[in-house]
Image (cartoon, rainbow, N blue to C red):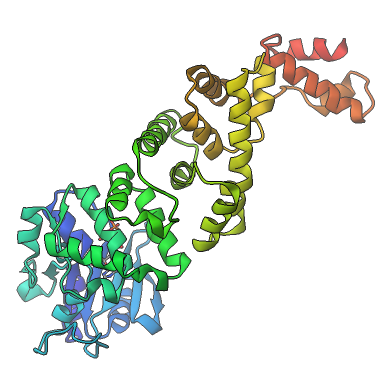
Length: 402
Ligand code: ATP
């Protein structure tokens, strides 16, 4: 239908990028990107009018999002003819606007396009030997100035390489070495560096890409003190194990996995350096608190627990209760003492959610007067419960009475 609507306006229409790439890789992908040769916004409006979908438009970029009643979204972009070229990046030959659009992309594997116009429906466009590179499992840029144009592509290269089990091509690897040597990243905002690092840390298994960042001497983009060694890799693998454990047991509990990996990465740094890293990445203050003060508190707590395990379930609960899930996972990964890891996992799986079944109303019903005593009684009930002394509501009421 999109092809037909585009044709009626005299436009070309294509599915492009990651979706087509993933078709060739037999990988599921729900992100459909459409490029229109013509006016993408006018196309989206015409389409929405005919099919009753909602749209969001961004005039400045000539892009639109088509939103179906069930929430499914399709991104629409305009292949602009006028194209601000970076010096010498473009060979001086005539290109169709779709070809120009694809030439601006990051890697050859992302340059496939499928025609949507009814006459040519389903035809594959492969201007930059994407199929060959997919077959060769190679990540290659389209031209030598690619990383000059956009240094964030370096991070994308590592991310795609590990996600697909591909290898960065020889010339592309040399261009990355050059980008690192010339420190192209210093002109990137913290925000953009952070976005890319976070995307890497949110991959299914980020560890190989982090190791690869180490190979390319790229971890200095986070901080020069971070170096890949056996201990760091072991810690990151622990993080991965703990996150897998968490995903399995607590499917419904959200967890910012990237923060746990980043805590692992900066594990060996002192407080001042951690603050420096957070500022370089332009992290929000709540993240800065997490990575600096809260993580330091977690390290301190861990040290104490490694010195001596909490004597009771109640003591364990009170030790760990101040920490949010991500810090608990970090502590489980960071400790080298098995018994401590076990205690933390016991807290997280068994103790964390325990609370008194009765509350103020029940205490009033017992004839008590509301006041500071209530807190004390409820705390005492909690401790008794944690240590397994109270099971039912009736037990708690008896306990309160005493
Ligand atoms: P993911 O599964 O990570 O979303 P994707 O390939 O769909 O992978 P997006 O980040 O959604 O990637 O980008 C969509 C398309 O836009 C990509 O296929 C790529 O060709 C292009 N693109 C994204 N970022 C850049 C960039 N920095 N430089 C050039 N092209 C880019």
